Structure formats: C-alpha cells, structure tokens
Image 1 (cartoon, rainbow, N blue to C red):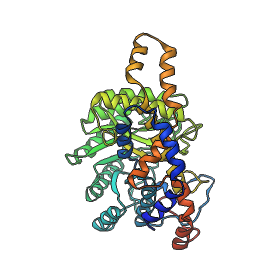
Image 2: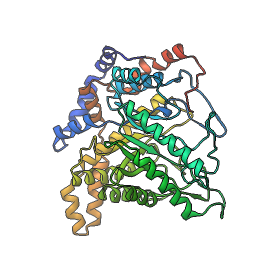
Image 3: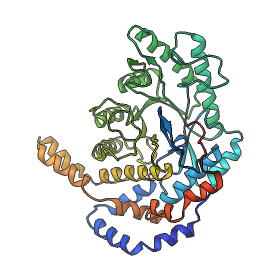
Length: 424
C-alpha cells in the first residue's frame, strides 16, 4: 500500500503546536541551525529487503502477518517507511532472495515509491535448491577450485543484476571459516579468498565498488577467514581503489572499540560504510540504539570529524544501511526506530564543538574533552529531526502515524495473516 500525503498531514496537524514548542526550545541553542537542518534533511539510510519480514532464531519464527511475499511488496513496505520518515529513500537487495524478473518494471515501481537501489548483496553462506556444489565447507576460500568458481560466478551474476537496477556497489559477506583446529590452512584459505575476490573485482564496472564485510565468528566458531577489520582492510588494499571495508556494528567481539576502527578506516580512505544494528552479547541484530546509544554517538562523532577532514558529503560519502532483524516487533516499526536512532546520533555529532574539543585534546584536558562530547550527546535532538521530516513532507511521529493509519492491518488484509517474507 501507499500512504497518501494528506493522511500524514492530517496526523501532523494534531501535533504541530506541541512540536513547534519543543523545536523552538532546542533550536535556540543550536549553532548553525540552517546548516544542521539541511544535513538532517539530506541524510538517508538504506533499508535491507530481508528486514521487512519478522526475523527468527534457530528455535523458530513467529510471523506478525501481512509480511511481503515478493520483491514488489518489499519495495512497497520501504515506500511506506520512506513516506513516514523521509529518510529511507533506498533499498538494498539480497540475491538470490530478490532476483528482479523485470528490471525496468522494478525500477519504475521503486521510483513510484520515491526509492532507488543501494548496494546489492551476494549469498554464498547457504546452498540454493538448484546449486550444483555445496558451500558446507566454504565458498570463496574453498579447497575445491570448482566451488570457488561457482561462488565467483554468483557474485558476478549479482553485479549484473545490480547494473540493471542502477546500483553501484556489491556487498560481500562470507561465512567461510572453520569449526575445529586443523580443519583448514589459514594462509591457503586467505589466499584463495584473495584470488577469488580479484576475479570478482575484475568484473566490476568502472563506477562500481566492492564492500568487504568481516565477522569474528558464526556460523563457524573456531576461525573466520575474514574475521576482523584488519583482514578486510588487507584484502581491500590488495584489490585496489574500488574495494573497501564494510563495518557491521554486530560483527565485533565484546568490548571492541568500533569508533577507533571507523576513524582509522576513514583516515585511510577504506571505509565503505555501515550495516547498523545493536547487540548485547554478539551479532544480535537488535534495533539500532536500543542497547548502547552512547557508542553509536561516539561512532558518529568520529565519522563527522573524519568525513569533514576528507571533504566528504555526509549523505553520500559512504554507504549507510540497516542490517537488523528481530522476531518480536513489527518489522516496519523496528526499522522506523532504527532510522530515528541513527539520525539522533548523527545530529548529536553535528553539535560537537570541534574547535573546543581540539583545544582540550591538545592540552590533555581529559575532563573538558568529556564534557564537550557529553554536552552534545545529552542534547535532545528529536525535535530537530522531527522538523526535518516535516519540512520534507514526512510524519512528525512516524510510528504513531503508522498505527493511527492501521497500516499493518491493511497489509494483513491484502496479504494474509501468516505470510512469509522471501529469503527469511
């Protein structure tokens, strides 16, 4: 379904006075307000197609009903999200879950919903029904050259689908690794992966990028062939200028200083972008900002400083995408919450007094440096983000509007109560 603008405007009208009061109070203390508002309005986060259905665990999955059954319906759901928050103008596809049968029709449908296509994602972490060789013992690192070739050809096929949709990046995450000591030779596995990626890299169009993701464990629990940012950075450096490292916030061991990793990758020009989520224990795929919002702010603090130092456009300089899925929330509400959390952290980072922070750092004034960061973090930026949505034609209260319009109820009526999203 599509949300009509008059319905959003009607709901906004009921809250406009209270919003204006809150906005005026916060805006009065924001230096360079017009510039901040322009950046907030321009900042969009891509929605992953696989997060539009209820997630699950190895124990089970509990559908909420009305979930998308095909790519067209997934695009419709992202259209709903973007109509409400005006900050989600692109969708990221996972192949083969989301193979477009008619690329022209799919692009037209996306445009009708105000969307374009972000990075396309390959899948060599599970076997498909028509697949000749198994990825049980890996894909790009496999000891069997035939298996590696199959995985390479799949990634090249994904690039071809992406070209049809005007995407500009291939995102590669591998589950390749080992569960037991001695299962594989670490050096040979890494060399096989590098050689495989070189073939994929050679197939990239001139204006494309390849984003190399990393993860320390799961589904393999002894080793992962691209296990951390250093290994991803090494591969990206060996491949060339079109390759860089993709950071998934859940793909780190507990206590990892992600903000430092981000800072160094950005300094080296090798930060591709982000898969945003949150976690308590590991790769939990929880709603962004639901567990550790201060860490999210600290990451954006480094991002804003680093992007400014490199002269990058905040909205387009690197890739921004959510990669989260949980089994107890309405997926659309969960994604709306995640986008909001990301924009809050970004807005707070825009408030940091860079000049004062640099002076404090140079003077080794630790207390003052902390005060400067926490002053920005403790500022409630929600009214400014709501104002950015309002100026862009979105909802002051996206989740409230979603519920008021009974969007999920309409989707259940259209699609049924126990639908299952493709690929989940």
